[in-house]
Image 1 (cartoon, rainbow, N blue to C red):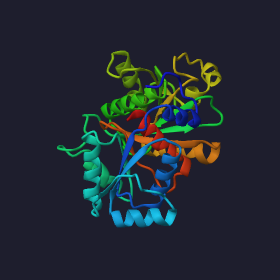
Image 2: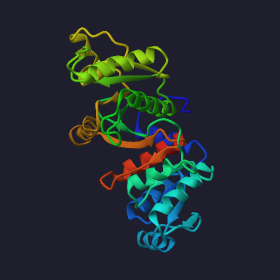
Image 3: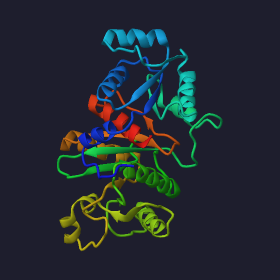
Image 4: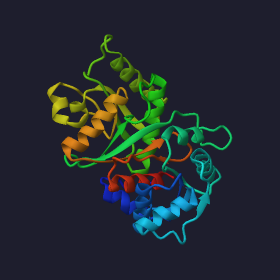
Length: 302
């Protein structure tokens, strides 16, 4: 767990460099974008890797990119789905600390993660948490869940919050301030999201969600701007200082994250949480830095 609060992506990098390198098992590693991330993470001492996949294709990709694999363990498994199971088994057996997606469908990777025999089940739902470095803020901001759960139930949202709190702790954000977002700040029976927000707030009060200060419903402006909250007469321990934003559904989370990137100049990385070990799932649209920071987040948590 981090001793100090990490406030930027540079802080995350430096925190990882201060620790012994963790090992990342990559499933179906014969992918150019992944290979470049592997090279960058090793050069910056963010992680070490075991690459699982078609060895001939892995070596061919590495050669084209000029990536040195002399001291990188390779596991030959040309079948992508079997490669996912091999990579998961490396993590569940303790031979690796973090799982990473390569050239494979996310669903196939997560199927292996949830396997009853060799998987990484914990009983909690899997969810995605984005970590954002926003120029307008003096702290890191977390958003969940804009990547996995389409329309989570109340209990699933409680799990999603608990997953994010686990990541917040290793970033030194404790107790994390969690804002349950809605369009308004009052409970309205015609708006089910506000009822869920109130229930989640009470669940945290009763210890059903641990390690954070949870409040909602809160609109986005009140969650992030104290003056906006004061103007509306809102008294909340979270208002103006939210660390974790919990969105109503996947559309809201996805739009919020991308809006910060494309309209506010934010940088964004993230992890799939809720498994026994972190899972790094990056997109081809992600920047090179986002991939490296996602790996760094995984090694911090792993």
